[in-house]
Length: 335
Image (spheres, rainbow, N blue to C red):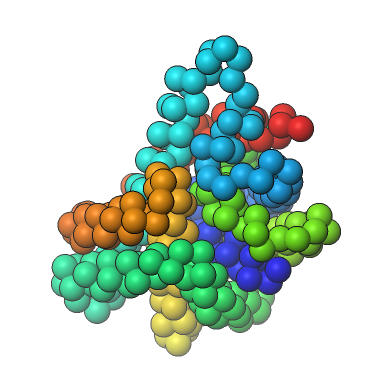
């Protein structure tokens, strides 16, 4: 059960979350309302996780297409085209996220240590290929190792931030924060849905699903609030800072800057593997095809990693968030 929790947390805590960019864009700018927005998002995400676990257990679902067959039942093939479009969008998002995480891995080493992007892109490609070849076992093992370290370091940074006197930004005078909270939840459920499906074999009872949802939701909420707290340490214009949480850690101390580097890399790797695994599990009909596709996407990632990912959170995620609302509604309505 704990392993399932770590996979869920590792999937959601990606580079955008850990860098503080997501928290700033979707929540921090709305002041006290942003704090409420974080809570609202986590409640939605938690509920959707529970619904998906319930659906996959009830209908013994093995891949994303089977999930669509349940949440979007066909009536005389009326929905067949829409189902194919939705499936394509989900897979495109998962593959794009994998490539961008790989690019983020290379960008971090180039920015912090001046290491050529080609070398680090080869490293992340080989690492991804090895872990993905182990299927769900590789995903479980990765998150079991990295996520406890990431969570522990974030908690330490959160405690350190409590000693700083900070003031919340002024709350927004409109309800946009509610829309942002829903968008944040919706695009996160895109990634998490594909990762949850293979967990069917690891969850035996209904009460286990409830425990997983509660522990995962509380953990993600606490980590989100910690990053929100970290951003309060920044006196400059955060909108101009690409990795605000990393910047904030520098203000706390040099050692915390390096510790946050571990968080960023851990978040990048776990999200990259989760996204790639979701994609491979969705598009592969057998193990031979899975291995072939794994080789292909990891090879392509080497070249994609040579490009940046600075506009990822501000442009791509909200777009997929809008598209993810469709899936969000379908899952919530499913009985």
